Length: 71
Image (cartoon, rainbow, N blue to C red; front, side, top):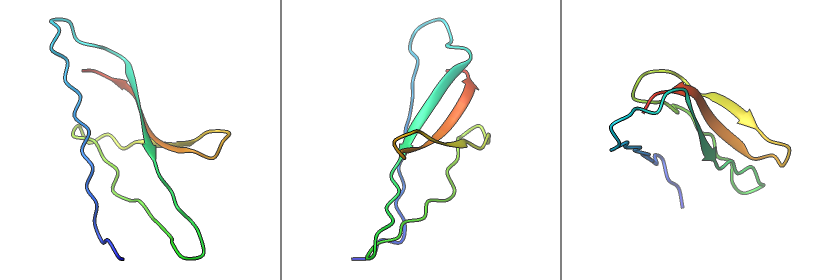
């Protein structure tokens, strides 16, 4: 099976009367590299146009990371 495009949208809403300032957002990214599969993720973006930093933890998990966000 071949999938050309997958779009995943995360929407965060703050219904409180005070904004969250200086927040951090970690979005887990699944990366699959095997003999029969190779996945490349690109065009990870946010609605405010700020590109993410890609981080990797000690276990090999990969995250798109934004800091200093206001909600």
